[in-house]
Image 1 (cartoon, rainbow, N blue to C red):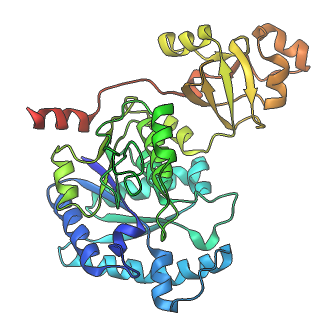
Image 2 (image 1 turned 120 degrees about the vertical axis):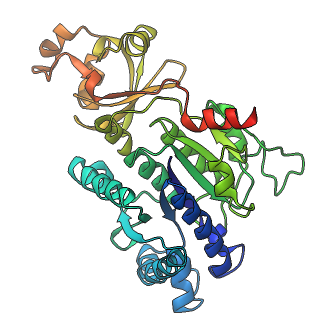
Image 3 (image 1 turned 135 degrees about the vertical axis):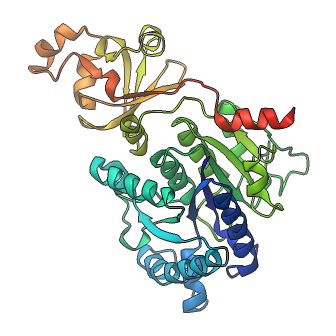
Length: 380
């Protein structure tokens, strides 16, 4: 099984003000055991900025980007040194990979990153991935390691993404302030009720994420064919038990079968807008595998250019697919609802009859998943 493990800063610090070496060593032990059992593991690790504070002392909690980059640059060295040392205790090699959204949105760089990570996994090496904070600007940043881990899961065709946090999983309300909150054991559809439950959650003081970003990550990963589990990083043998099929935390089964590599790249790019499509278009996409035509579009949301990724929504707001649009938003506003043979007359030019061709489109349907089967068999 190919597994992506995401460790948040609060987990690595074990609730304290510095990185907890015993906690890190314990998590490394579990990952090493998975590797020795034949699993392939990618580690997406927070903690560089936190480690930078250890090195530079406790400066004021400035939030400006240049200072964060200073902390990340110094802290990443210490973080990798710790991982390299701890994994060596178990005979496992590690490699560092620093990524930005631009690396994953550009087709050539995406493939280079994919090939490198897959080659490392074939050699039994554990890639340790973090966002490249030192060069980060708003245009290329992912912003949190939850979403980065989902993009990495997409990148390497992961079977499961394990998001470890300081809570047992997703609750019906924030358990820190609501004693009646209960754990949600499984989420098959991320809908309004799930978002409402998440809305009451908060961020950890030391991290950049929270339950909101974990749900975003779960939505992205499950749409690319990866199961997701949100669980406590403080639970004993949490990684080994989940990999063994034990039901822990909150489980999100994949909502699509494995998407071929070319189409997985579409999911790596942040959508620039959305197209609301009618029931006929929904049926054409889901049941007949057809392309999206202008005639099926009822609303254009956002501003985007030709070649950008957009979400395709039903009239009830449900995401049906994501794809690369052949027309810019200002063109689509003019041709929505029209037949394909009218496009040239309206615009004075055309880029083909399809707004989103089926070869450039990823459907978000439902399919059974590997972890789901293992959890079911384990429960028998």
